[in-house]
Length: 126
Image (cartoon, rainbow, N blue to C red):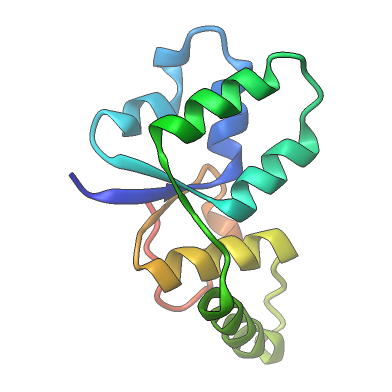
């Protein structure tokens, strides 16, 4: 089964909806092995205030693989930033780190916000 990375917005959508089968994350999990970049976990945790959060993340992270942001990812992020800076394409810091993680590990990214990533050379979006 092919591995894909998921963006924070897929986790937020899944967490908030009562009918999980209606979410994109649920549908993708039937076709792909889901991986959660560590930056996505951080971004998700930062934005949530809910007593069920720990249980949700514990279950999710136990059922998926997690991708660390390491030195190779940092180098890739710097490269992406340097390529995009002269073009005027701005990218949010978290999106830059998520893109660098997916590119470093060689996995496509599933996101509900493709415009945040589509100008990054080499990124494969689902």
